[in-house]
Amino acid sequence: MSGGNLDLVIVGAGFAGMYMLHRARKLGLSARVIEAGSGVGGTWYWNRYPGARCDVESMQYSYQFDDALQQEWDWSERYAPQPEILRYANHVADRFDLRRDITFNARETTAAFDEAANLWRLETDSGERIAGRFCVMATGCLSSWNMPRFKGLEQFQGKRYHTGQWPHEGVDFTGLRVGVIGTGSSAIQSIPIIAGQAAQLTVFQRTPNYTIPAHNAPLDPEYKRAIKSDYAGMRARAKQTIPGIDFKLNPKSALEVSAEERQREYEARWAAGGLMFGASFADISLSKAANDTAAEFVRGKIREIVHDPKVAELLAPDYTIGCKRLCVDTGYWATFNRPNVALVDVSKQPIEEITAKGVKLAGREYEVDAIVFATGFDAMTGALTKIDIRGVGGLSLRDKWDHGPRTYLGLAMAGFPNLFTVTGPGSPSVLTNMLPSIEQHVEWIGDCIAFARDNGKQRVEPQAQAEEAWVAHVGELAGATLRHTCNSWYQGANIDGKPRVFMPYIGGFPAYVKTCNQVAAGGYTGFALS
Ligand code: NA7
Image 1: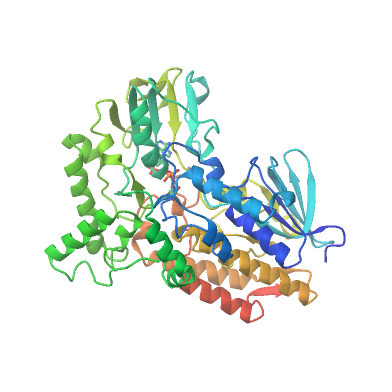
Image 2 (image 1 turned 30 degrees about the vertical axis):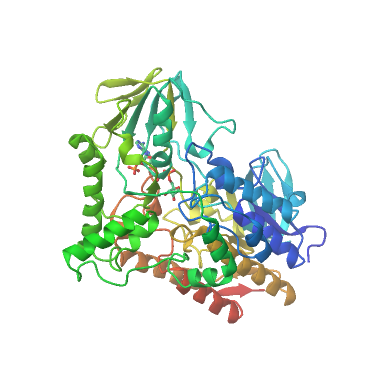
């Protein structure tokens, strides 16, 4: 198939790129992965900030494609910390001998479709060139880190860190005055730990977030044994749920039950901890009135935990709960009771400037020795638009997505033959457990490429009308929930000038998989194969 060139070039050696490589080998396809980092792991390679851990429980946040792998790996905690997930990624790379087909320390800068040869030609920042019949962008949803263009940034004389690009050797904040900008998940995980080290911590908050206690703990060996005795059963149950996670959704409406029952349910979910607080009632993400009851419960907890009523009020979000991604924490709210922690509201009077000595706003300078930018990512599209991707007739992906991302199934784009995205915009991705979503995409893409090969086809490209219909469908579903009612990264609101489009597919894992399977079973309906 390749005639000297590769069958497949994969960009990114996170969980998506690693499995794509393994799958390609199984299908007899020649493949190489290009990776910017010096090791595998993607998100878990870059995000080494203190307290970084997954908010999906360890027993479910892992590959399931190989039963021996899931049986032999031993997770230590309910929510795995970043170093353990990175060890797992490295274990997978060793176990399946992946590294020999990965080029590390190479950042993809351009990818262009050569129409005469039906090849993707890619170039890295060091000028290395590579070509393949197919190209899979396994570039991650939260990998293009966002550094707001603060005035004066360069003049700061202290240390600057971004949570998404944390130094490998770690950072010791002992005795320092530290500023954290942002209060998203990365900040919420790192703030309690930084507060424990720093002499003084100042948190600059633009929008408060809802967070639920993790109640993280070592995993009970009996619990692990029970899951491993029927791992397949648990995975199958998970795939029948909207987020692809084995959990219990309360089928009742928050508005149908008595105030006592409602309170009992929220208390029980709060005590259990984690993201499944959002499943306390069936209509939390659909009905504003139902949502208000959950939001008010969390606000009540904040008022209970945080001693200073003014600080508690500042920390309490007033928008739809679950609209921005719900966070999971260990000791976040209580951290604001510490005498060395201060909260600064930057919602009405934004940060004016980073000075040589610190952060300035509202005419006041907050002097700090180090600033942690926990300012998030250009989510879902950023990693792709950073690369100069050119399709048919030199069409640039940046231009095509000028008004928001347009894909067919979140997997492929009209005008860009033989190019696939893993967990791209328009797929369930970030609204689901990423690992099963990655596996489903990788397997679907592998099958599609094998189908083309087995049928003597050189090109696979979505038809414009199929893409159009999918984009409309994704938008329509998003409009039917409360998810579009706040400034979230799901709809690009955190990046200046980014079009406001709700990017992930909100219809849930089972409905999405069914559609993908129907498309494949129909001989890849909506795609032109030639
Ligand atoms: P997030 O959730 O996007 O959080 C970024 C935070 O940074 C958020 O509180 C932002 O406020 C804040 N921010 C961004 N720009 C500014 C400026 N210019 N001034 C002040 N504050 C700013 O990123 P995370 O890394 O925490 O988490 C990303 C995902 O990773 C998370 O959802 C989990 O899925 C894992 P804003 O809310 O935009 O007002």
